[in-house]
Image 1 (cartoon, helix red, strand yellow):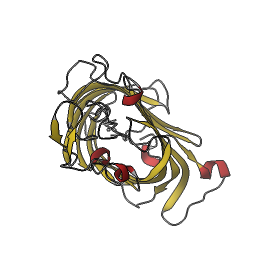
Image 2: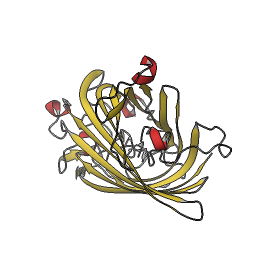
Image 3: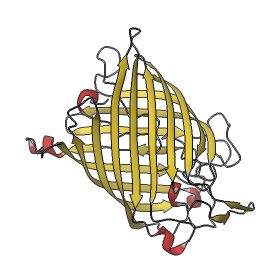
Length: 318
């Protein structure tokens, strides 16, 4: 967007954090403790930050857009054991007055297909994973433009990530809150940024539970590539999350203070039908140190938290 072994798996979404809290403008509604089970969160994985403007007369609403997508993922490293999964995602996005909305809800392993580290709704894993990224325009509430140079609009920004888990030890509940802005690039590139502080409730039993722990700097960019005579359009969507300042590493040498996830999306879309391909690069995915020796009760293994993961999705927008 991005659980227990399976959730470590990339929180089911791509969430494929893929996500993009919607971008305004042209696209106006245009993304543990070592002994704990590996049910890690993707911390934001959605497949497609929305790049398509609403079309009146086509959708159920002229501003609130929704889609259902079946997503297949491979080598997703939001935890120390890369996970493969096929899951169902409901996604929404839109802009109304001061409110810019983006979010998704995933049902992990909906077809009971995944690797050995992947668990979901049918096999005692998480039945639901969700992320919601609302932003509230400060300019709109103030009734005037607060633009400064290229920073054309300002927001109070939030990112709430919740993984229900099969029990409290396999559950995560994270709130990012801070300030956001849209940036005028004087080009076809739509650019936005958010800076958050993180409050952590449950976190799969990790040492930072129920505390303020770290920050996230987020950059999102959307580039319309081409429109075609058959009514389709091709769009590049990218976003990078840089998490830093966590205290997780102080209690566990297998954890890190920093983590980076960079997501690259190609979206080929018609009025309703959408096809998505995603390449996502992880560095210290889930704040796990790559190459660390771990054991979650099923034998020793070395963490793999650096490298590329991939997603493919087919969906219907309404």
